[in-house]
Image: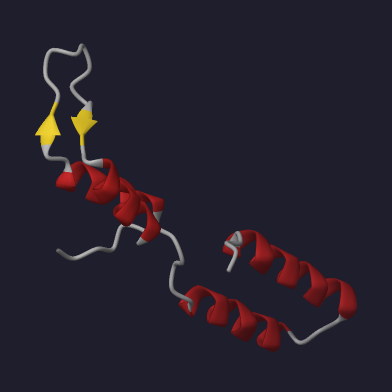
Length: 86
């Protein structure tokens, strides 16, 4: 599997539609199908899960956004795209 930029793909479909004289209705349906696909990897969900599951927040380090999380748990969260339930 590989990730694609869905918005860029839809722009390319729109461009092909115009250049080749394809039906705008068919192009719109294809774009709708693209929009209906689930997100394969949600970076925001991963970041939120990492923050939520951090076992210890590091204070006094000069940066209040420093967190500590076991490596194995972080790897599991990243591999799951932020969608783990424990």
